[in-house]
Image 1 (tube, rainbow, N blue to C red):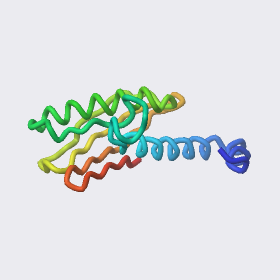
Image 2: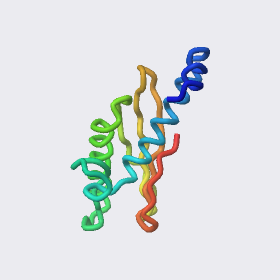
Image 3: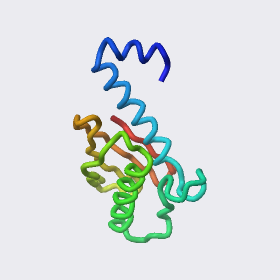
Image 4: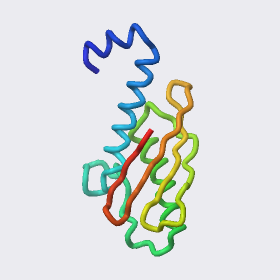
Length: 124
């Protein structure tokens, strides 16, 4: 955190809280957007390749548990409460609602995974 951000955060706790959430969301994009076993030297960093799984429900279950596990390991500032599957009819776009807590405050964000474009995004 830069000196200016530290000084600004002393004057307003809400600015610090919003800044921390934005930093956490950016870190989640980096962590969860990394392919496990290829993008980083740590064994459980990122998400596994799910292309070999044929069942849509199995993919959703695997990703839900890996999202929670990866966040618990590599983003200690947040505590995951729930990972809820919000995928609709589309089989190419998976979406999850991530309910979490930071500094005893509850937050929620959306996690999207586009299997065709291999894109991953966390949005607050």
